[in-house]
Length: 209
Length: 106
Image (cartoon, rainbow over all chains, first blue to last red; front, side, top):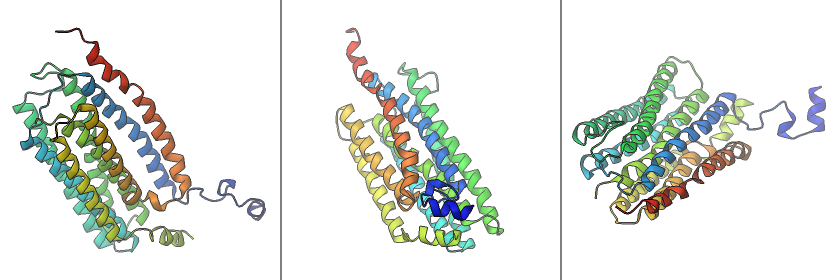
């Protein structure tokens, strides 16, 4: 039976083989990323729409500390993406110890991002008087869209940290395969990718000059 | 079979390539920060930021997320749909630029 189908069609869509030449976990993560892309684009769109349609949109992000902090946060996330790539690379070469170290490095970058972001939030709440529903400039949409967007992103980073922690302890104990690290890497790079849009559209577009 | 696939799959990029992509991403971020302090009209700044971010996203997807070295069918399954949905959302952005003009003079 199988020899017949191989003989009649060599198309990857004829069944019996993966048309994407990838494992199901990785494809599942790609589908999740596609759907999450749309969630974040909707929130980014909501922020940008409000930003463009309000001439008196607030610009609460001073160069120090907000822009400096958010630039360092971008650096942390980009570097953690590099260490995650190195972890996948090490795991593909069967080096579990090195892979674990790179994953822990990634987690340090992610944790630094969360700490800096929370202190940035605190600066905004305490020094600029911005809350999700009120702010001194009477543009409540700013707080709503800002905290909604960055809050969801921070939630993703924290979930990523937990995810990577689970992967790291399993990898060092000899469980999980290279593809599991790669799937975790896909998630982590996606979180980084979303920040590449949030940083310019939210922070730099409303930087206080 | 699967081991063979995995070996073929990872030939595409080396650690040097990843480091280069990382540096390119940092440089593009630096350009964005500099751009933020140029006094440009909102829409031009928005376009520039979105353009630079799309380049950064493409670099991350192609190299870090390894899509450049996957089959084309995976890319074609995922991305045209996502891009189409995002473009559908952007249809409303034109309204945002008209709303300030519709305000009664203060």
